[in-house]
Length: 425
Image 1 (cartoon, rainbow, N blue to C red):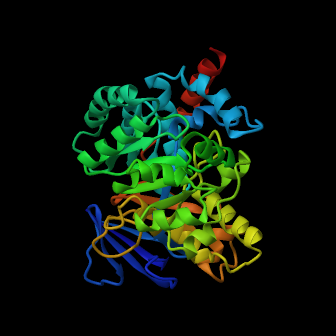
Image 2 (cartoon, rainbow, N blue to C red):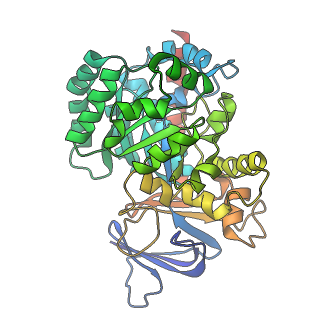
Image 3 (cartoon, rainbow, N blue to C red):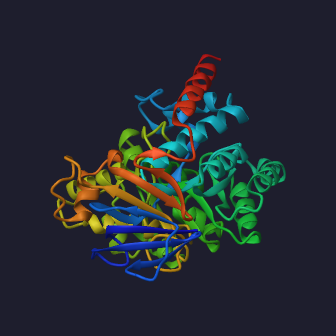
């Protein structure tokens, strides 16, 4: 199957330039970007007035937490919020996880996201939903508790995930260790060894709150990054969610091990965790990507919103409007996310030979006109209403703002039923 997207403003994300041209898709991959008069398409889309960019990459979320959106929103601390959330999560069954995941996937697609990283339980159900939606994912084999529990999760959960993935190349499994305050030393070591043995990556929440840092120093006599270094956690390719309170001497450790930080600005603001100084991290040579966190602590899954907030809070905290440019922020949601997940050989830029993960925005709308600069228009003006068309591996998931692989009305109906059951149990 050959698809031609004509008359686009194209942001390849190889640099901060843009140009008018066409994009050819052949099966799962980008055949060309720019012009190719000899390309004979089976399907042609006229995209006049629209902007093409790489599919957005959500580097950290808990997809099925759509079930807990707008629930217990005004807790005093992260720990107080978790104390409200954990008991509800303990009630969730396979069916609810599947329904919640479908809702999250519909939202991801409608906000231009084609790749996400998930950390949750019953991951086989999220994989099932994700493959139905046609979205690329890095699914976490999630670890909590001690070494015994870690081994049980590998033994019982990983085979289910493998079965759900089948022969698909849209899903990879990483080791996702919840946190240093919910997982023991042995748990981290087992997870890291599992990831090493399976040639994959590890990720964890880290330095999300100042209390976490204080407790780490109290319990381990080490800051969180230094504690994980002492466990050889970073010997396996790694990425960290949040990283709000990483100290200067820890930055060199992360740079040495090529560890990426997944910045989650909305969640960090909402839970009063703090604001990660990502401009400083960038100057220290770290790769910074973007995540939404879960819909319970955000409360949505839009990377367009995250880009906007990331740029604004960086400006106000540094008192420097040039600390991050819109182009740099869009990199965080595209190629930097791909690099964090070690998928940049496949996705993250628009160029021949890469997989056809493409997001197309209609900026010919009142909220984004005049465009003047498309990077600024996307980061400062656009919202999900501007997302027009989405391809993942060359498959059209959204066209004219309408979902093609999922039934939104059915998802909303089922989500409401599931939430009423869980909350009222």
